[in-house]
Amino acid sequence: EQGKKQMISAMDAKGIKDPTARAQIMAQTAHESGQFKYTRELGNEAYFQKYEGRKDLGNVNPGDGIKYIGRGFLQTTGRTNYQQFKDKFNIDVINNPEKLSEPDNAAKSALFWFEFEPIVQFAHFFSHPF
Image 1 (cartoon, rainbow, N blue to C red):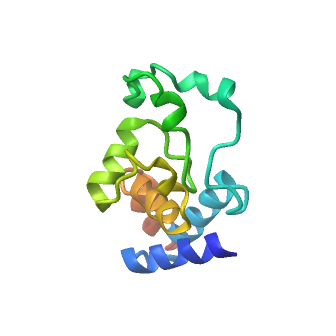
Image 2: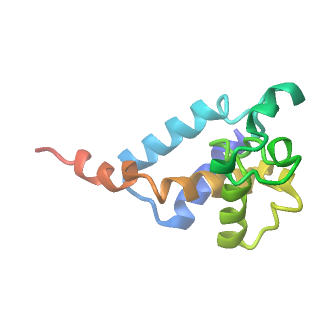
């Protein structure tokens, strides 16, 4: 329930009022986080090696792959995405990546991702009859 409350509060703070957009955001974040149970990607160190050296994620330093694993309600992954979150919210997830797992930050990171996705832009269109 806590994660759900954080998502609702974050949407309210962001001014997302459209019921279709809210439903889509809640559905996606609930799915990605196991009904808001997980704010950290599941796996062991061997599993996370798949992120090591991934320049497309900004993981250019040794150890970046394990350090910048998926966190938040939509599993923000990679140094570049963590840096963008830090720049936007002034929360140092580069030196303290576990902060992205905190429920308030998990919700912020999810909405930050949706800013770049057309789902929110098109939701208003689909919430009205043709």
